[in-house]
Image (cartoon, rainbow, N blue to C red; front, side, top):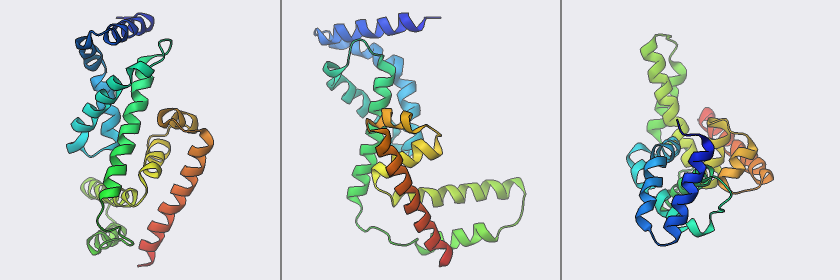
Length: 197
């Protein structure tokens, strides 16, 4: 097994080669980190769009290689680019919405009522309830701004600390705390409105 130090020095050597004009050397970094980048993107993006966003991550990383600090590690750097690409994806989706929904559509309201009325503890029912709850959560997350959505996903759904989320997004810890507080309040208001309808 390759040690971390050997792996890091290999990455730095590949980056040096790419920056000196040997662009095909970048493929080895893509191969090495494809699974890692894809796993990050998969947590935040609908499955049918993961491949496209992951590819965008590697394009962004390639274009930004000149800004990579040669004394740092490539893996955290590309992880940060992956999280930001996910945030940008949701920003594009958010901007392209034709109509912002102010309340839950009728079919979701019916699903929510069904979830609340189901009392069975059978495994199939629990799976169905979990699926419906996930659909409701996806709807609620879609109502948030892309930045708020990423903060909620990183801090509350993935369990990252404020500092870890700040590092990945390139924000201050204070900004993460403020955004997570505001996003949580927005989600609460959205779900409270559903409860009353």
